[in-house]
Length: 404
Ligand SMILES: Cc1cc2nc3c(=O)[nH]c(=O)nc-3n(C[C@H](O)[C@H](O)[C@H](O)COP(=O)(O)OP(=O)(O)OC[C@H]3O[C@@H](n4cnc5c(N)ncnc54)[C@H](O)[C@@H]3O)c2cc1C
Image (cartoon, rainbow, N blue to C red; front, side, top):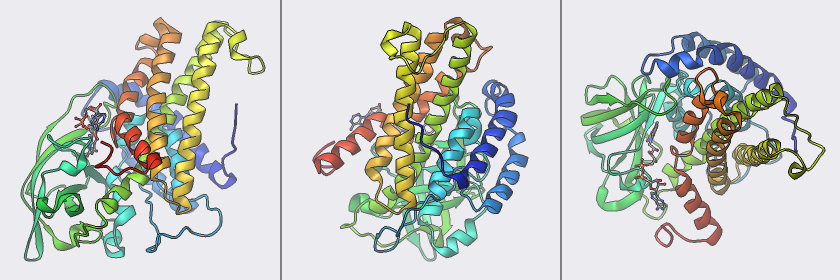
């Protein structure tokens, strides 16, 4: 098996994250899987502690790093292992503990990534330190995010937002919601911008919380925006509608967040593999890494196959994050990593349930829970099918109109 060492400077971060996963997340993992919609109070203290740790080590947060590129898009010189890679490494460890709890960590929302990626200095100052969720999806716009119907109309010094948003992760708990809305639906995708809406804005109404298959520790909210007024300065990025540039600005956020979701999948997959390896050993099944897989028992052969798949997902994820740190365009690699890691996580966790038989299916073990948690990682931030479509478009040089 290929085993790339992680950069020396990130080893303390990975060790600390693993301690948090082992000592904080794992002990309460089942509790909040069962107590859906109750807030994991244990995370408040942990979030402050981790922020302190990260500042001291000058490392990115578990979900708040951003992809910021030079205005001319040039790559930075040299080889950097920066906050995107450290964030990925931290997420892998924390999700080895519990992905639903990671998604519930205060101030580490996907909206924080959007802010970190495209906010100007003033916005970074104003919204820094707050917890931000991300609201793109609508009843009529999921995979096709360009089809959103929420509008933002300028009225004096304010934008007025109207529309409906569904499936907003941390929507009930976050301080801010980053809302995608169109400045002018007649101008297509170029007119879609993101706006920061304070959670207590009277124009933002919580409709309901979802009940889910997995990640039940994480809240998923549906909202209505009705004449929701935000200051002009709440628009993230450039307010101009540049039809030549199209959707690029908004989509840039995904280059950052997709490797993070891939990292979640890598973490959950490794949790299942690690526990399965232990259970197989307890059952007397020895894994021999020096003998070809097909010359070993069917159980070992299957296990090794899953481990190899997982390793490929991990390497793609690290590559996508490393490219972001080095300011290289990484849309293709971000989608490849997300597609591979999402699918692998589902296959591996279900494969582990299968290999461990009754132990895999029962609630005494977390294997059954991980197989439920896995599926969302292949859905949000773009489904498996959508990632493959993006990869195909990039490899074949086709536009979204040509290949859909
Ligand atoms: C628990 C949870 C948390 C979420 N959190 C957030 C969040 O924080 N913020 C947010 O904005 N959204 C969030 N989402 C929404 C998520 O991103 C969408 O569910 C996802 O993008 C898919 O959209 P959809 O559900 O409308 O499915 P659809 O777009 O209707 O797709 C249905 C199926 O058709 C396939 N499909 C669609 N188009 C194509 C195509 N062109 N070619 C091939 N196959 C295609 C899809 O892959 C999928 O399998 C969350 C969803 C869930 C379940």
